[in-house]
Image (cartoon, rainbow over the protein chains, first blue to last red):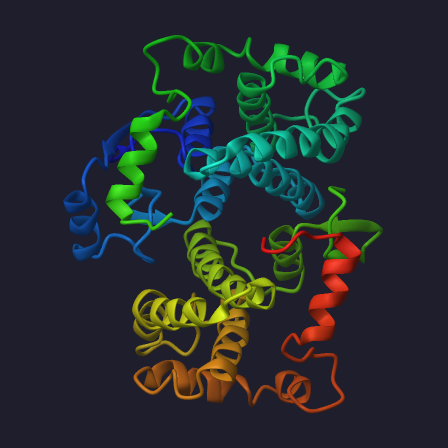
Amino acid sequence: MGERVVLHYFNGRGKMESIRWLLTVAEVEFDEKFLDTREEYLKLVNDGKLMFQQVPLVEIDGMKLVQTKAILNYLAEKYNMHGKDLKDRVMINMYSEGLIDLMEMIMVLPFNPDPTAKLKEIEKKAKERYFPVFEKALTGPVYLVGGKLSLADVLLVECTLMLEEKFVGILKEFSAVKSFQGRMIQIPAINRFLQPGSKRKPPPGENYAKTVIEVFQIKI
Amino acid sequence: MFQQVPLVEMDGMKLIQTKAILNYIAEKYNLHAKDPKERVMINMYSEGLTDLMEMIMILPFTPDPKPKLDNIQSKAKERYLPVYEKALTGPVYLVGGKLSLADVLLLECTLMLEEKFPDILKDFPNIKSFQGRMTQIPAISRFLQPGSKRKPPPDEKYLKNVVEVLKLKLPL
């Protein structure tokens, strides 16, 4: 099938994790090159591999793709996990954008000196703003859009698992979402991904935040 | 859907999430691409431009915009504009030889940048020419005239309005 797919990112979740999920569900093998030092990052920049000097970078089909959403859309279309028509596509995109917004709130927590207040805010938004939408969409249907597995479903599984790591009983009042999660994790590729030893990355620890701050020379 | 605006009502749907809306409109009105490789190029360019414009968009909500302004100018000149300058060396449009969402956003972005940094395109002649060509498109030319639906740069009143409606706590 040609060259391997190669992911360039930190050895952690961040913005790349959704891409790892999607590739896994599509059963596409990928290699990873981890950014551990600023030198490695600068090498990527100086080699002209990063369009906007940013990661994630995904090398696929002879291209160097950047911008998480552009990458997710490309992969979803390629592996038949996007909508069959324009109306389905916009539904998938709306759901996906919302889920990415929510996951991003959790993603930036390690860089926040006082995460407690933010955690409360995230839990509230998840329960009042986001989950009711997906609860309604999954009352009846097995998948979010068009009766078939799409990018939106993958992101919803990722998101619910991520939220349960922080707020254990958060799906208590969202039974349709909980059932959906149960169905999805039985998909063999997802099941394997959730076992130890897979390419799934753990929640970010101290080390992860330190590495990112150092590589990008971020001022907090 | 997520208690947020923008909301666009069209084709019997209530669309939210700016990028979802932009993609829908672009595809519907032939301002996107059919080929996946061209699509991803348009999307990459577009995401970069919306990132840059968002930096300007949130300035009114920042207590001390001056250092942010410096940061925006330097990111524009070092990270973003060189990409488009290169892409427009030769080609008339950014992707696939036809007008796309990416071109529209580039035009919007460059005009917005010039409002803050009048000669920012000095070292980017291809982008400047591109801007010149684009502003001659009749619909765009009309949009840039007074009285069109184009909105002015944000002022105090706009800031107050948003803060009040969304009950925002500043700084963000």
